[in-house]
Length: 475
Ligand code: NAD
Image (cartoon, rainbow, N blue to C red; front, top):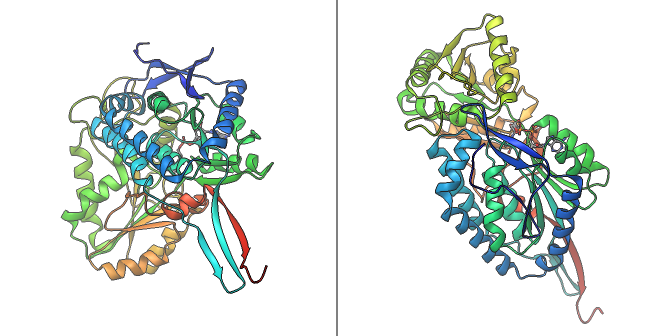
């Protein structure tokens, strides 16, 4: 174990250490390189109490003051982006460029959201009365995030929650806690104590948080299976919930596309971050006229890119982030092989103990094969032929998930018609993966409840209060 940083939690503006620790593994070599705190129930109580005390003052501060501090927090993250990005690659596995991109985007997210407002709405303004709708903060929010985008997905929660006047206790994934712990330490001098507590622990900490009476809301991003447990636990005292869960996104490629122009974009829409993206393309429906041409181009890209340790120059795709996920992806691959499916693989995997999986395209598997029906969350992509667009849309919608989707077409109006027919929370046309602070993002069906981002996402961190105000004469 070697590292020069003290990975303490941040509770009430102070560094808090624990007796027990969790080893953090570099997925590129399978070695433990740092120790993260393993919080106890007493640490959680401490965090919730400090956040509750901070809430009393934080909610009273003018919106503009909270916005200014959030903006400053964003600047501090950006100022430390280079060192955070190096740590990011070590704990998450993503190559340097992509790591730096996420760290900077996290700081920018805080700055962008700090400019948002939730003005008082006037429901009625008649001669007798005026009805105003105010948005009040909820209290202490529990934020629980996964390992695939450990910082940006936290920013989706931190920025709107704090801006609206809530305080927060945030728990990163035990697989990727270090950058978030470091950000907690960096912000000790920026945010008032207790406004943003960062705690860290093993498998028991998440359930302890969702059951804790001190939280007004649980904002959760992770798998659908865990989301259901969160909802069940939160139901005991009717905590508010936002659930951003799994997906099995379909992309539909129409025959009029320019294959040379779209192939790279479609490839990275499926495989960037080694396909560990909730909104990555996970089922690729391609019109039969262009199927072979697109398949061959995607396969050529897969063979040409470098797969390896993200810390090495020129690496484009890194390892799977953790061993459990690695085993799941390998099992899916074995199932595809055992079922006699045709697998087209990319560059060979590096030697050693890293969690590497070759980029794999599955050539037109049956619609009911596991690789089509399950969320792989790893670089194994089924390509599926269609010759009738109604059939393609029906197959795309035939999923328990409904997170996002994409349509690739030269004829944009035709693509818009298809977008309206997809049962998902987001549809991209001739692009995918883009998420903006101004645009709501949320899943249909078992991909989630509620939304993040946009005005609607900001409003989810508030409770409306409707006040009926009589006019002077009526009183
Ligand atoms: P996960 O559900 O295993 O874990 C997510 C977080 O929940 C982690 O911090 C984990 O420690 C915590 N947790 C685990 N059990 C818990 C419990 N019983 N109660 C409370 N918290 C608990 O998910 P993961 O493997 O970290 O992430 C991958 C999944 O997340 C994929 O399904 C992916 O599609 C999904 N995801 C969704 C979005 C989105 O915005 N919709 C974004 C990214 C990832």
